[in-house]
Every structure is written in C-alpha cells, then in structure tokens.
Amino acid sequence: MVLHLERVKALAADLTLVLEGRTPERIAPRDAPVLERWFLARRAEPCLVGLSTGHPLLPGDGRPIATSELWLLSEDRMWARTLSRWYRLGRPARWHELHS
Image 1 (spheres, one colour):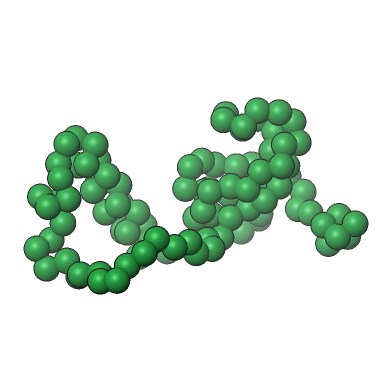
Image 2 (tube, rainbow, N blue to C red):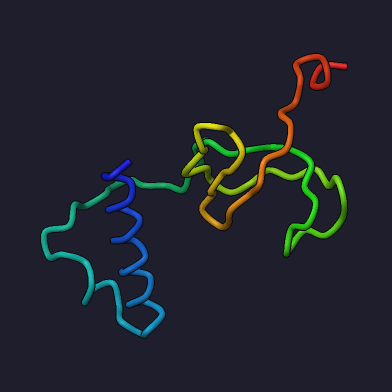
C-alpha cells in the first residue's frame, strides 16, 4: 500500500507540473527507460460494479456503474476509495442476483 501511495503521489506531482506547462523533457529523468515497438493496450484494474445513487456525475437512483480503479476497501466493507472518489457501501450483491 505504501508503494502505491508513493507512486500516486509522484504521478500527481508530475501531472501538476504538466498542467503548469512543463514538458515531459523537463520533468522526466534523463535516464528514463526507452520503450521500442510500443502500442496502446488495456489491462484490467480492480474496481467495483453496482447500483449507484447520489453520484455527482452519473445521476439517478440505482444506476448501474463501474467505478474507477479501487484503491481502498475498509475492513468492515462499509467504505471504498476509488481513484476518483469515496463510496459508502450498501449491501453486497448476492450470487443468485448476479446470475438470475
């Protein structure tokens, strides 16, 4: 968790510099690795899927959503922190509800 926190802090600092007008050439270390024969791809990240009520950007009650990347799930399963926001968690889905 500490490693992820440090990575997110570093990412946030770099993105802030970009927003302030700094170029990658001025931000990135001179010995940054080179990536050859690269292409864009996708990979799965942990997230939550459920029915949202009170979302600031996705209005409606009981609206099906998938959250951004999940970063924290409280031990009591009452709260979750995704990359974009906190969620209060209601009851979890039951297996038969997912497959009926």
